[in-house]
Image (cartoon, rainbow, N blue to C red):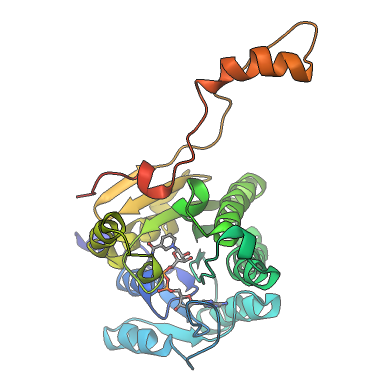
Length: 308
Ligand code: NAI
């Protein structure tokens, strides 16, 4: 890495949510190494969302400071609108501005659909989808005033493709993806960009993936080779001015592989000049469209090769 690259975020102030561990920690450390001043947010939640630790992000703040960087800790929850406002206010108070928010905080409450409780659904939507809305909204007014800003949201192959037992999480993550695209559209005129990363990395979150069958065990072993630090370079790039014009996109990162993900578009259409009846749909439309149906595949069916 050249010197110019190392200071890619000089002068920038970033908020990274859920940065006490896993992917968020690596992003916060990487951004600080690249010259950003960082608000390290983490509420200290268990994987299921119960509050477990006090100041879990403080260790990350200490590491950034020890390396000569600047960081402050915030322990609010992203699912609380006022908490999100405090995170952004803290960035402005401590460092004078806010340039980027990385919406990374997350929890899991996996359950097969017919057993999923309202509480399981609500808790996951609150952290991922409302969390991304609250922090983005709190930063948006600053972004508009200064005529610049970048949002980076962690989405998931669970939402983009599918997974067992994650209806709450998949709905939240596809919601975050649509939220990102909507912000990109609405705020383009203010030079505000919004992109998603679909990460693959061994962390506390992926350690909950079932490893009962030999197939599942092999998949988990492959996942263990994908480390959270590999998600940081793209996050740093997307936060930087070098990413001007990069907005409304969804990237996937697995180790040294970066993919641009597709976005839904019509695949194939059928027309009937006299219009459709339920019968003619069954006789004509569905047979014509069936060739393009998607199988009920899961993340591992689509990402079925090992990254470098
Ligand atoms: P992790 O469980 O290691 O870290 C998540 C962090 O978020 C924790 O430190 C936790 O305390 C914090 N957090 C939870 N609720 C919070 C709240 N309400 N307010 C503030 N902080 C809160 O998880 P990991 O793997 O690092 O995941 C980071 C993001 O990447 C998540 O959004 C996750 O859904 C997403 N992701 C991760 C994948 C992976 O392979 N690890 C795959 C797909 C998506």
